[in-house]
Length: 510
Image (cartoon, rainbow, N blue to C red; front, side, top):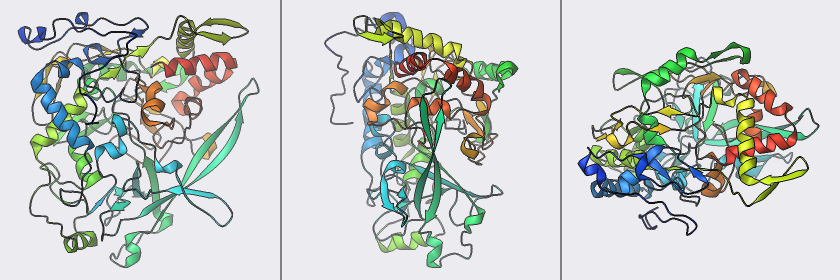
């Protein structure tokens, strides 16, 4: 956020020293990991983009190659301002939207608590109802299609549940949670929650369309925000390495067979990396400003409600549609901000703090190391691949600016960025949302990168995971794994409770 000191501050218990800060000026602007002194108890997650923060700003801190180069820092700060500052009807917001700024849904570059767990009412039988917030954002995107996969002509792919004053929102989301009890083999019980969605207050009910929505024809799926951790490294990934992972991601003994998603963007067929289903080839800055906030730009010059009654309502409220709301140069500064965010270092744990394990004591560091061993024993690493590399030239921003500082890095995202079938069995639905994205079917999801996951509660004050926040903690997230994740889930479930807890503790160290 803008009110914090942009210079990195580190805990008094350790120091991160970047030697020869401007060394890169004499070497094509490339910093090297040998210039970084790693504090005891930490390990690099993303090469020179690793930051050593455990605070609420752990996701929202600039990497050294940004902080130590004035031109990069200026653009990063400008992009941060555009990302965080609330938009309004006077500077491009609306007429309909999902959030009033990037930061409204991605607080501190993380995952703002979704309204899916904020109660808005109660049914006559006492069932709690959750859904669209009343604060100008709901921290979720509501995707709708017909059962045959076609979009609704008068709504597009997303229901915008917010609108500026005097304009009718496209609809509102209601969510009712269904719960089911399960039991680990050792007798410990756990519970899973499944969301049932209902869209209400369709603007079609106001008679503005000849194509009203029939609930029997509706598929609805919801996305809560992704953590903006490691975005630059993801865009700098060696595509050949990812495609090679796709070719050899075949472990029939565990039912695993990952594959790449390919999509067409800007008229070019490309490898998808970004998004829950790897359905984008870039960080979707322009799409986010357009679809999420109604802010027009050169890539998406039309209002998201073009041709709908909200255009006329917006005009009556003083909106003008005669120019773009934001420039390409500004969009690229936001892109640089996302690329320039540091990745929190993995925390190895304290050598002094003691933890109980199977009737005896061990250090926290030993306990986390044990949890890492259990992570491998459960075969989680077959999809959550620990180590990848970035290509030599780094990444290129949306307007052509190159970022060589992201090149030739060894990184640890804990993801193969491939699609995997996550099953359709658990609670009768599993992870299948029936929503196709590129080559990804409804039951296929990109392996979620795990770096930074253990700091989400500190950054965003909640532990809701998976694409729609149905998992209320990491154990539930694991137990929602089906399909290609079934074997790993079962290996985890069969572990003694202390070993399951150690594996979760390891995840919390990432």
